[in-house]
Structures are given as structure tokens and as C-alpha cells.
Image (tube, rainbow, N blue to C red; front, side):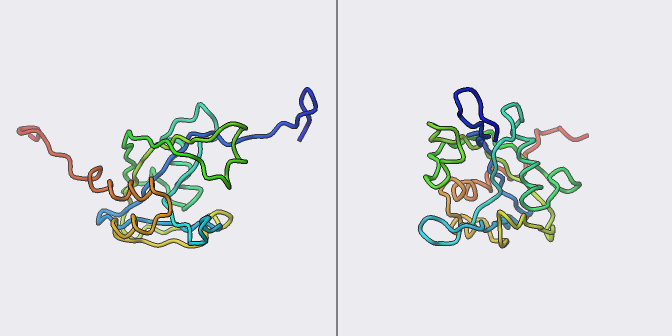
Length: 173
């Protein structure tokens, strides 16, 4: 790292804007991935795909597509995949063990929610530095298995965001 003016080393910090992507099958089986580092209470840290923007101008949809690919090897834009922007955000306190990744004084993160419907049997390839295991669970069980309360809540909301869209009478010809 090259020193900047005043002898302070320049460091790249995480942007406190991220995505949470609940990946699921049409039958609402939810993909959970286990982090390489356990939760602060010593339990396994199971979660959906999460990740921060790479740049302030990166839009949330692009962040979601990138993070899904990086963490699971799933192409969110492949045929048969449906990426849904829930247009919901969570604001939460950053876990103390990860505050060092953010600029001094940053204490909260804003998380934008998505779901990604994938065909049953979609292969998963984990990024080994971030995750060590994966599993598919029914949506309620997935909620119970998530370490993060916002992730658990997103799993519980899943059926509301994937319900079939009702067409207006006479919409089909």
C-alpha cells in the first residue's frame, strides 16, 4: 500500500451497500451455503448469497448477478432462471468482527433483497475461500437454519414474492 498525504496508508474498504439473494427452486427449496468461519456463538453460519457492491455506481441487480456467480457458480441470467428484485431493503448493524472491513465510523449496512428461481437440480460450485458446504432445504427449514435474522425473514417472505401473477380478465387473446 502506498502512503497518501500525511503518511496514512490508502486502503480499500467495503461499501456498506449489499445484496441478499435467496436462491430457490420452483418447489421453494432454498439453497443455503455455509461460511468458512463459524458464527460468533460457535454455530455453523448458514446463509443465502450475500455481497457488497464493488463500486458505488454498480446497480443492485448487477451486484446480485455477480455475487451469485462468485459464491455458487450459478449464472443468474441463464435460461430457466428468474431473478426477482423485491424492492425491499434491510438496514442492520454490521457484526463487530467484520467492522474492520469498512471505513472508520461505518456501523450499518443497507441490504437489498432479491430472489433467484433456478431449475431443480441446478449444480452448485462454491467459492472455497468463502463457503465450505451447501444444502437445499424447504423454505421454512431454511429460515430456521439461517444465522442472520434478516436472512431468516427473507426465507419466510419467499412465498409472497414468487406467487403466480394474476392476469387481468381478458389479458390473453
